[in-house]
Image 1 (cartoon, rainbow, N blue to C red):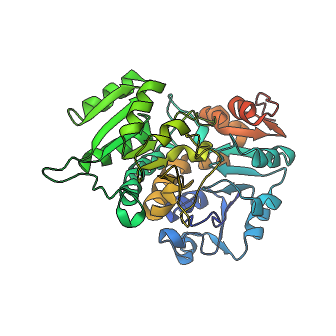
Image 2 (tube, rainbow, N blue to C red):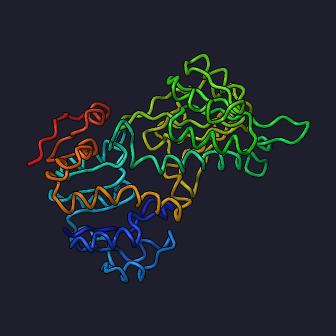
Image 3 (cartoon, rainbow, N blue to C red):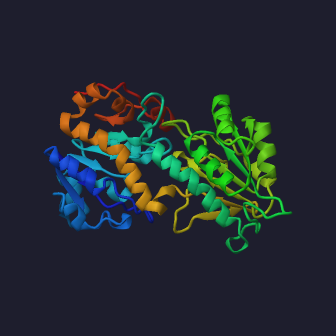
Length: 370
């Protein structure tokens, strides 16, 4: 197969889908890899690094998209890229279709096979989402700490405090992969940390990992409200795979927060997990907005800021499946690795992920690969 890797065009998105080692594996398996010039430069990978392993460097995105059987990306296509979508194309990337009806419609209308990293499920885990979730959780605290400083508009609080001065109160909603990453950094920086989740086992696991370092609460509206009200920094990480994020943090809760407090919404890719950030993603160029005196950070591609780390982590996770699909074709790949089925969100003009269909008001059709 011909595999195309275009340069990402999302605002300050510096990641690239595959590193030279992964590209080398695909070429050794007999596939042709086309890479748009400078696609890897933001991750410290030069064109010559790809050429040395046998990839072809292409000057235009148009040629990469048009010649490829599979487009291998990091982020969902933006409107400028919709013109490249076509019926015989396999698109392998983060799609985040829940709440993105326009992209869903384009993929359906043009009968694109859309394979979404974020919904691939194996042993009840999300292996293609996990590495970016780990990075996003860690960065969420890092970014939150920065915006708590006075020059950034925050309250002027040092996360870890000093002797005789209490540390910042960091509230983390969600004890999954993102939440665990956030807890790790917040605890390491010496903050007072509260974690909320409905999964008692997840809370127990965190308590065992960080004994006497965190407090845990069952996630309900009363506990969320009380915790958010006293927080200096809130990290919202709620995820329902393939679905829009629920808005657990209500505007009335935000109004009770202290001026200069910070909310980081890591679930913004799935539509946002607060009443205020819902449908209001920000970017690395313009990362925050202020409402009710509270700083809201809702960047939709947080890991893109640490592209050298993120690119290698993502490539390590995704290479396995693109090799399987390219080597065997989609149908046989799904027979060999049935978990790929859970990643197929669109096929032959239909939404084939029930959650996406319900959230975007599309007809759902069970996958039947020809």
